[in-house]
Image (cartoon, rainbow, N blue to C red):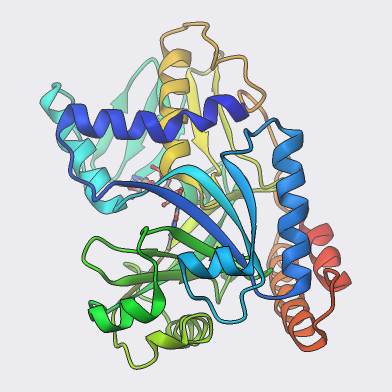
Length: 361
Ligand SMILES: Cc1cc2nc3c(=O)[nH]c(=O)nc-3n(C[C@H](O)[C@H](O)[C@H](O)COP(=O)(O)OP(=O)(O)OC[C@H]3O[C@@H](n4cnc5c(N)ncnc54)[C@H](O)[C@@H]3O)c2cc1C
């Protein structure tokens, strides 16, 4: 599984080149920064985990404060975990480019059509019924809206803010010459990229989950979330203070009860599925697409026997337990981050360990 997944970035890039899709793709490294001894310890554990899974050393490397700061001048940085073999991408350009590519191959895409039910041999929509021998459900964070799947994957919110184009003088202070993807090792972590248009895009989570699996309307982001992300940006990169935020949007991620993705096909109903990527679906969706193609065509390949295929994680709890569990987890994560920052301690706060245990993360 590990080896197969490692190839997905190359595969996405290969397809984009072959199909002439310009999605701002740039091969780079991903850098997770530690800003406290506890965060550094978590990165060491993660690196040991990578080693145990035979991730080659050149792909996963632990570096000290000076080397980390030489890439991006993050405030109070103590070290970083550098993951090679990744790429920056503009996901909206990627998805539009892929849509155009499959249409060129003769596929018809029907948009503005809401699926209201899926059953053996047919899909009901607000515009009529479609019949098919094989049906693939790929609705990710919206899957709960399809009857029968209400507790399958919960919609977890994630939001992004984007700065105005950053002046060269500010880049000189920040560094970030390699356009690395970066994140921090906080429990309530953030993630960021330097865009092709030389803006900083930073994402994170403020309202993790809405009662009853409700989702936002058209990506409208709460003002409180925007402020919080701005605070994180200014804290990690004080050089960016004074930059205006030009855009903010949010969306949902599909999260299974055990936080592990699945793909499969039920031969009895002809209904297949893939998703539950927990926010890491840009390359994984490519891999699940290839896996589903094998399953739909009854091909047995090196993908179809992997452990995520036809895995059925247990369902999420009914409300209000679901809401209480997720919100308790995030409250504890925020508290754990504050305690670790205040104490300067070397160990992960026990509150975070408890939070992960509550929700099986
Ligand atoms: C703010 C944010 C930041 C992210 N950052 C990253 C990142 O840095 N790296 C990464 O790898 N991933 C990231 N992700 C996650 C990534 O976007 C997803 O994992 C990926 O888009 C999943 O692809 P998908 O095609 O399976 O699902 P989606 O892209 O969610 O597509 C699902 C589609 O199903 C449609 N749909 C849903 N319900 C119905 C219905 N009833 N009827 C008809 N159509 C329906 C939706 O309209 C949508 O078009 C991020 C997500 C968010 C929200």
